Length: 479
Image 1 (cartoon, rainbow, N blue to C red):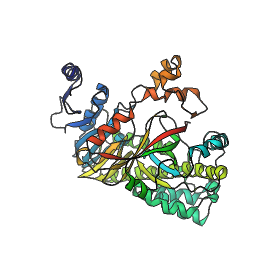
Image 2: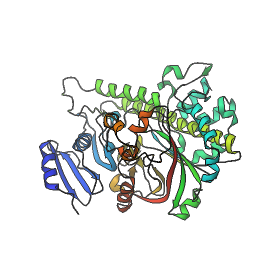
Image 3: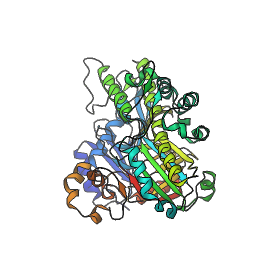
Image 4: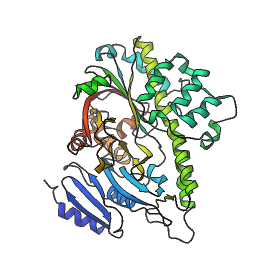
């Protein structure tokens, strides 16, 4: 079944310089003036709007080619596809050969998802909800958390990620982590994508976070961040794949907590620096690309490509530890309030990152890896279901899946018009959102997001992922 007014839509897109075709829920797009670029494919449910700006951004990204050599050889987008603020559409996936594209990852390097399960019933949780929430508000909003580290621990964190941080903590524990079960954290590192460790270099981190000696009190670690980032308490509502759920320690009726955060100010520092460096290395006298997306080529600047990938890995290591600490603060508070709870990790995976895959590298922007048998976490809005999935390793979509439902209304639109809408119109009826700023509830209201069920269904039908379990929201922390 075709979308309504398809011919009119395609003609309108052509007037904007896009060559677009449609077949079986998939839009194929390329810039009219870039016939040599790969055709980018976008999988969308039939009732979803097609945003010309996002299509133009994806077509621009697919056409990125360095004059010294290097190109995009494949491009696609997941169903949470929507325009990005920095010129790259959210949900974009590109495979490159001979080049990397710092701007395709952006500033929130290794933004990702983390999921734990908790052997508490909803009734047990709600009986002490207020006590738990007050303690978490202190940690997440009022700065009562203590994530003090030695200079050596910070260096190890940036260099080696979770394993480096753990080794240093075992030698000299500091902050709230002295109360943690470090052996549990070590065992759980196997359930983090890449073991929570990439090839970083502490010398590429912000100088103030890696002093020669002393203690570091980093105000960014263990913080949620703005935008669509969150920490959410959920209930395992339904298990679809009992074999995998059992293997992953997931059962119906459990509580869960899901964390969505990334590399915070470290990612902004590294991502911004390398977007500027890529532009600065553009060959003098050559016209800038219309998209203002600048790649780095292995042919002309192999040392810069290697340095960028190591810098990105440095920020990624920080993000892995940031999510771990957000989870550990919550787990410690659960143990204080509800006593003997283990709250094991199910999985932690990135969705803004460059990885060596395919013929060169695959860069995902708001899309997560979905390799065969790998856990995949896809959240809905704070008023909708979230899903624990398993990857099918579909090469047609570069072994990827969506990282959420995708926005349908901008934060500006919600701030401008949302305050005049009712709770029901915003989808906020019954939503338990813990925040210090009322505008955050409105900006992130369920009405801002596409229907998660359609996003899940179309990916299951396309054999990108399968459902393992469905989770319903209980309460959400928004910074």
